[in-house]
Image (cartoon, rainbow, N blue to C red; front, side):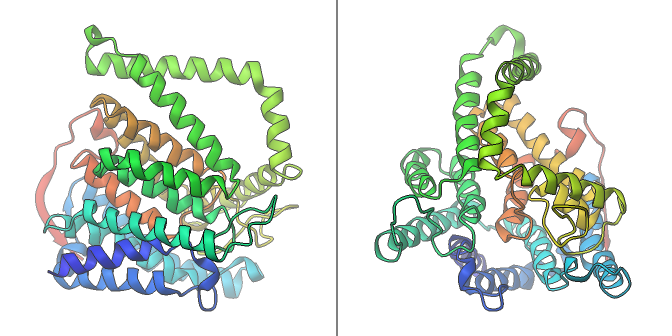
Length: 388
């Protein structure tokens, strides 16, 4: 029964997560309270297993995440805030967001073992997101020509995080229903005029078509996977070399004078100055130099600035591992949407949103015991359990 309430609370909470302009003090709204409720419900059943780990790849990564976010990062954040001289760059209030996000991740991992259904949660997510957006579009949106639809978000691009995760969840857990609901999501997102969403969507269509056409049965699953990836790299390099000038012109037009590349570059420089532990929660990039209080607008770089490169590498290794497993099992739609998910995060920072951690939990559930390199090589696990 607790899992059913958690599914409902989390699904509705994620469906309302894009309403960032309605948060009190910019931090707490209905979505955050519902997500907190779902975590408390799941922890009530699984608190011991959430804070324990097996001597395995999964266990070591869980220990690293929990220690990093709950222990080291708070200390680093307050050192940066009081002694680092970074001013507004440090944002201690986001310690709560990341802590709850990581607890959500591992609470979900344990709750799934006791009957929590990502499928039902995804339906609640879809119903809430789609209906609330249509209500906003037809009753509250100004609808002015040339205006970007924001739907209650501070930034229209924030809908990207939720729409893309929802689409991927539907592809994983409701393949038939996805063909009905994803067009509605696309309709909503086209109104935001998000270049990152359009790029990701086009990439999904191209990749899925490519994967479906490239079916050489005689090579076997592994042979086809290797050949697909190799051919895809060649095609991408050829495409970039042929249309690079046109792509640069489009990027500069959408990027308002190359600001995003500058933020990414300065964010990378900031991360290099503390590559192991990062600088704590905050925004450490800038338009002229690092530490001007700007996000890098790139999920990998923003995570690296705050938690160190290893933290970001582990997360993106999970993404890549899921991609290769989907290819090996001929789940081409899932593989294509994973690429779209990764690409969408290259132009915005989604890590502070709970939906990001839910997606990681879904990926880990999809992988099962296959973490990181164990997708390609068998990793021996020890069944011994250690409690923190």
